[in-house]
Length: 125
Image 1 (tube, helix red, strand yellow):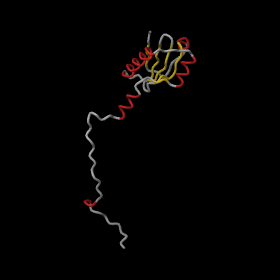
Image 2 (image 1 turned 120 degrees about the horizontal axis):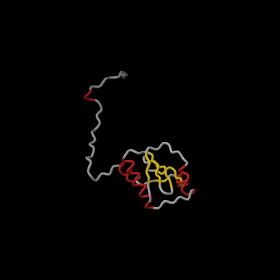
Image 3 (image 1 turned 180 degrees about the vertical axis):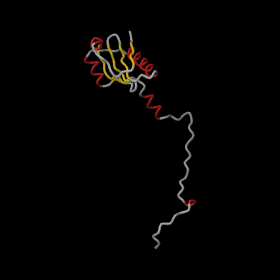
Image 4 (image 1 turned 45 degrees about the horizontal axis):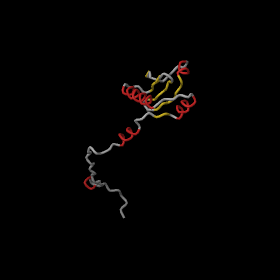
C-alpha cells in the first residue's frame, strides 16, 4: 500500500457544476424592500407610551400623520434624532429608527436642555 501523497494534475481537480442564477424579473420581491415597507410607520417606544400616559398627553391621528410626514422630510435632509415641538407636547424622535423615544408636556419641556439631536420640527395645530 502506497501512503505517499500524490499531486493531482489540474484537469483532474474537483469541479463543481456551475449554478446559473435566475435572471431577476420585475415580479421578484426584494427582502429588504419588504422590511422597509413594513417599518414605514412611526413607532412609539414603551418608555414614550408610559410618558404619554403619565403626563396625560393625547395626540390625535391627524397630528400623528403630520408628525410622520415631517419626520420623513427631516430624514431626507439627513436628520437622525429630532425634537418635535407641538402646542401641548414635545417629543424626542429617532428618525433613524422611526421611533418616538420620549414625550413631555410643553411646560416641562421649557425648562429642559435637549442634547443629541440634530434637528427640530415645530408643529402648530
